[in-house]
Amino acid sequence: MNGEEASAMNASEILSRDPDVMSGALVFKGTRVPVDALFENLAASMALAEFLENFPTVSREQAEGALRHATELVKRGFVPRPELSEGERRHHEVQPSGRPRYNSRSSA
Image (cartoon, rainbow, N blue to C red; front, side, top):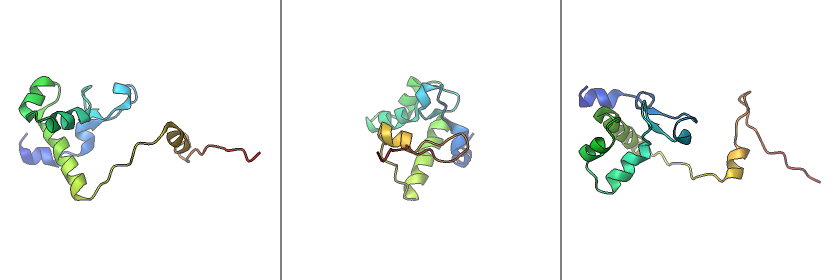
């Protein structure tokens, strides 16, 4: 796969999130390697080649695709949501029916 093919990969082809894998962390598809490990290692001045050597289950195409995807999000002005507290997460949970689940607060 060349660079153009990697850039054409969409996020669902390279990333995965499953509550049973790494506690639901965003990982490289088919691995247990959290995507944030790539960004943390690059931020710590690790070369991509060294990251790939340290995490052999991640392909170069996956790593480059994740970087391209993140670049596109930044270009589009994506701003990540701040972390929610446990109470806020429960407040925003979605029921199996697809409707938001709101905490009931008694007025008494």
